[in-house]
Image (cartoon, rainbow, N blue to C red):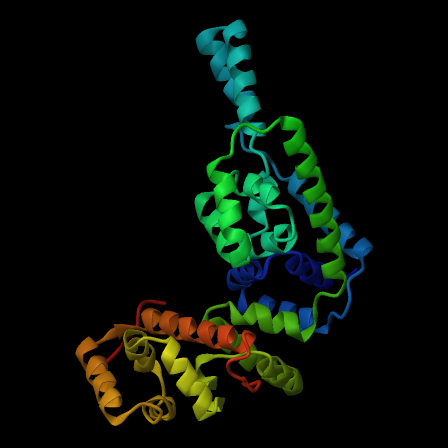
Length: 331
């Protein structure tokens, strides 16, 4: 298997957000090659994935370990300071603590993926899992549950008492098996243009713009196909007036005032034209009152609005047609 294909499969094995972070840290030339390879991948067999992951794990194992840290080093320090007998009992307690974090492997899956695996579980099982998650992740999981189940789960968390290690172990084992099975099944149909579009959608604006421009020079049809599956702030022009009006109800003026700072005149007129004359004037005044705004703040606010568009599209409230260093200041 070619190294480039191995790298693409490894990227596809990561969450989209993490894959985007990896791409952002690579040289532009490598990013372009990897993006093109991912777009060309239709199917990845379980055997291919396992071979790539095994090779990657092997290469990690070949790395020279640091000379400090770890249980062995901790044991040496304890023996030198407290003696061998006292060191042994303390180290055993430390080891048990390190290994006694139930469901720790789930923290790497992300709240969205975790919901896929547990939302059909019994409320008591969900409550047990949530009680062992970091607070923010548990909150994200709770908010993703059906409203009919949220109250039941949170009540069970509140009344949760000690659970036998055997029960926890059984649930962990079941979830691990389901997670691995689902992950492999998903990857067998991973890759292709949709995956590229999803990855580029969560990269920063300058990165995805540069990648698409470079792809155009090599394969203009592929670049166009990727763009059709993406939605960026400039694509607001492709929304009809009814969709814009729906969006205006979901986005505050304070958000529009920042986002429109970096927008072209057509988009500004698209938004202003779907507001009453008084509301449009108030928005323009708020934009002027803001003064210079950091480009990163503008782009972050534009991304929030894009996320709202996607949410409204998912709920069927609007229809979206497929489309296309240092802090800068925008006056």
